[in-house]
Length: 321
Ligand code: TYM
Image (cartoon, rainbow, N blue to C red):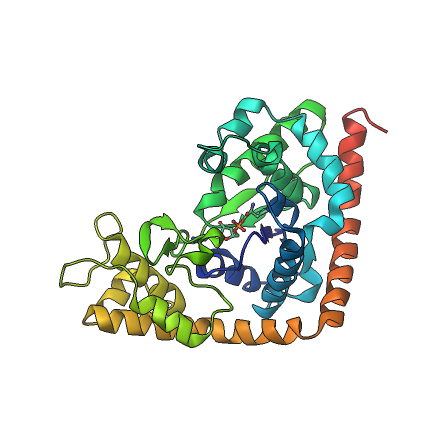
């Protein structure tokens, strides 16, 4: 089994990223695992170069801060030669209809006058990330499930058309915390773009900021605390966060608190404890740029060496070279 997954530095890493994906990457470690900062993906919407560079660094430090092995991390653009080549081969394997069907494309492109082609083809680049490394499991939150399905379809199609080159990957979505909601608007998922929203909790937030955000979380007018995501999404979200931080089910979490104020305080305390070590280690690393650069260069070398033979094989069977 080879696990691989990525995170896009389009904003600060939030609690949804942490609980739904990143912290699972640090668990059950295998030497073949690869996790990376997908900075190329952050260019699909307007971006500022200096901010992208800073967020890439910050996100990289968080991956290390959460406990992922330095041997298993890299930055996507450090492999842009290999990925760019495979991306083209896969774009010529994917149909326009398949790319245009992606829910995230429809959501992000909807209502915009001008949409970058990269926003449409981004899941193909994501397939290149996965297939280049022969990943068999892709630990992600619910919102990336469809993209991993595309990678599966492209791997199968390429293999049956030209010859067996790629492992067929599958998404691994967690039972709890697969889609953490914004605290002030549980109708939408917590997102990096919610930087200005009072309902976004970020991994590097200080404890007092986290407490304040939870105190203001939207709940509802009912008195009983019950886990019911359909009809009571605000309370369910808090219970899911509490459950993910304490290792119990959301139903059990509901019985451990006796009022909304108690629930909010308990969740805030659990989140602060969950994030404290990550924040502290990430901050230490951010104060040591030379060490971050060293780990980054080493990770890039390892990932590129690992992916190159597969890229060569794909090009050869497709009639190139
Ligand atoms: P990104 O940066 O949007 O999200 C990183 C991971 O966090 C998960 N996630 C969430 N989980 C629970 N609740 C939420 N509110 C929430 N928001 C995000 C995502 O599902 C994801 O697992 N395109 C990808 C990065 C990527 C990638 C890849 C992933 C690039 N190449 C190859 C897997 C394999 C992205 O932008 O994730």
